[in-house]
Image (cartoon, rainbow, N blue to C red; front, side):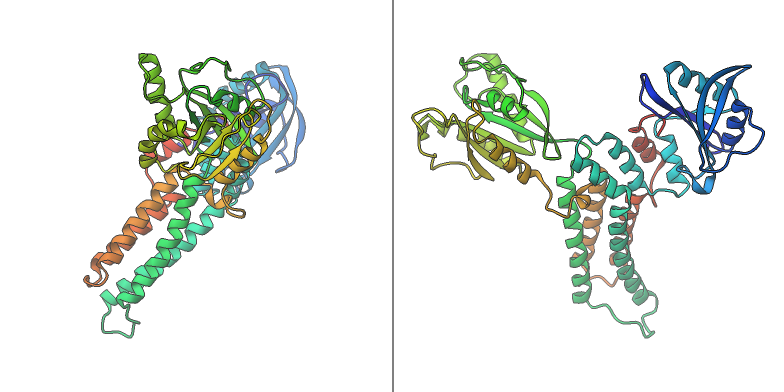
Length: 453
């Protein structure tokens, strides 16, 4: 299939000053020269101002850039037509390329060819998609770091260490009588422990990487505690309906937010009350708890003007969820602008921090934003290291399991099973950059791309 020449529009739908049509494959240069009636070859990687013809009539005046295979994104001859951004011109140009022997590109097919031709490894190819989808500064910089090979280098270091250990184990198996340094159980265990520590650091980064989906922050609390007001205050606009009447919110409401470069989503929920009799209210209560259980961070909003003992039922409702979920909590003491200001409850659940604020006046909201950002943010200098997808996390987990199994049997095993587990760990690591992968996996990964990339 790579022998086919493919074509697609590479710019978003709609009108614009400039539009780009991308062609890649063995006929790219011939198609470009035919449509521009150009007798001589294009100068590689230099823009040429030419006319594009539709039969005998000019279609547009455009810049055309030819990229030879050794200097192109895809690793094969490619051409970019930079035309005026008229949908008609772009679609007609694609039709002319198809009539000249090209085929319509599938989602991500240009990047897939870059991977298959060795221009990118699989983790870098995925980073291209993540960079296009990035909505905040940190998610963009993390994807760019991975595109530059940051993850690939860390995987290569791990792989080299596992390979060295495997070679030593197998050498002792195959040549026990030769002068090969013996591998003691203690030495092998120490080496595996070091590898597991590195994998654990990467897994923690994967849990905090925010590329495939934004961090979810669930806002929970008793009715009329000010949850919707807090949502609006954090967003800086009236997104949720606010009323003095308790129980205004009956369902969850999601709203995206940029927290100092972190891509996040706030989830407003119905008030938690265990004595609800209305079926709709009970369902809202259940959905609020599910939102908290599935969140990366929970905001527990308390009415600062109520006596501290009145929050006991709320804490009791939250506790079972806390036992199942690992998300940290931040306690928000709202309505600090109102009197009387009660003392901070002594029986607060274990939390990542406490903030007093007024969602109505905005006082203290900036402190909460800073705490939210700090609670979700990867430590300085590790943003790129945390830019991992679910697929990467699964591969690291598989490698860690194989290494743990090898370590468990080290004292008793003669080496055959240890070597087998080490080989399986290498296979898991190789899946990250695409050294070992399946056609189905490649299809799943590149189907996330837009057509034209």
